[in-house]
Length: 621
Image (tube, rainbow, N blue to C red; front, top):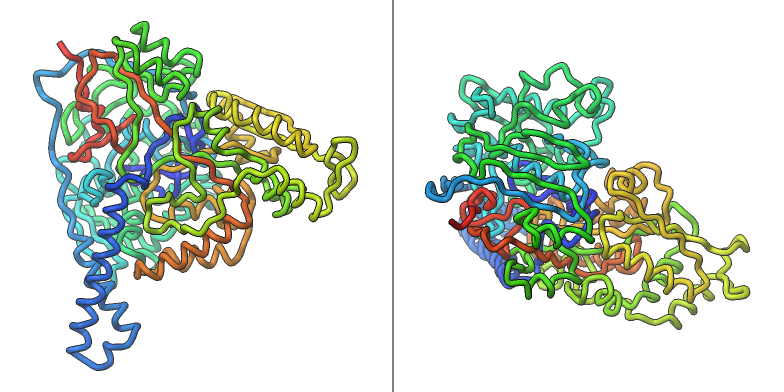
């Protein structure tokens, strides 16, 4: 299930507008396709709303003054009309679990490793799908959150939002009932403390590697007023309302009274990173051993009500044991079982098995190429590899046929998807021709590089992901037909992350991402030149500039043109080759009820209340 980076789901605290890179047993994507009808409808509605606002505003402006008929004035008026309504947020519903259904100790097993720490602002080296979802349990305080059910933003820790006329300054007023798990008040000072540490990478905070720092630094001013309980933050420029809300809700509180004076990212000097004594979410940490289990207990002071279960335990597991664990009653939920075991789980009368397809977006699998290494720095070589992959057959082998083929991080039913992308239909002949034309030669069945030596590539992946093991083996066998020697290098998840993001001693990485905020900008931090999450090392000034344009362009039609260009360039350059959406089969013990499939995330599935719906699960009597 884990995903090493790339986003953070845009709900509750971890709102990094990127994508969580899946790095574990991967059926666990935090996400699901924008290929659903609901997602398509939402995006289409948004586009229509923008268009309508543009028309209405332009008409009004034209009647008022001739100058307003200019394109610039029309765009400005449209932006004002559309954005104004977007910032009128309703509060999340205050729904707590049924009183008659409380109690019991719930346990689950994940096909992944647990993170090494539970820092509220994870670094690139520790960020994963698992760390993000655990964060939903123990950290709270997001000023507003995005619901993947009604596709709207809702006030959460804030009770009020006021936005300046230029839509760059956001004034949030905190609720008065926010408390830390020890009963003390959560104040604006805790938000200020968090911002001051998470946003700065300087002499006082040299190890800050927060995955969302790039987007957090779009806030140029962050001030608080203790007397009024307000947070006033100013963004560096005008953004589309969806992104502006995402950026302005990135800061979540950290208990200043506990963390002040401690290092921000060194767990040896700050035990709060591994076992926080004071938390803000629905649960507190009772015990945590990354190799054995994370045991949670309800936070009695959570402002939205006490969690249902008396104890919630999360255990790490492997493809070999997760299904057996729930079948034998060792756990109540096996999250993300291997796709090959889904049919078996579905047929078992003691289990309730289903595939989780969240409403808006999906996680997807892809292959990253280290463009800083030779010959991966050669576009023709990368294209040859992609043509050598029989994706349909590979999906059957790795995912038991589950999932849908994709050619972009923007999925096919999303209005921003570019329908003209090359799907690189399997053809070894095309691969061989590309290599020959680019100057690579075969000698005794070995493909020689331009230095005359046989090409040997290292493929890395986390061993907790059985599908990736299968993909690695497939690559080894398939690319051997081109004369390429493949060394398969599987590691436990945390070691894999270090190799992927720090040492960079790899040529091909088997990755997964998705589940981020449903905006085409979500992949920016994974591919732009200066991003800390750009594992491939790809650098293209045109792509960088287009992303900069897309992130500030308020007109939907113009944004579509921009992201079409980006998709086309990346599809041609292939620093990354996209494979398919990730299926997420889950198996529950029959006694568990109250869960909602087809939702946003696996750990903290959401419903119409914007609550982590696992708080509403209970045991049947």
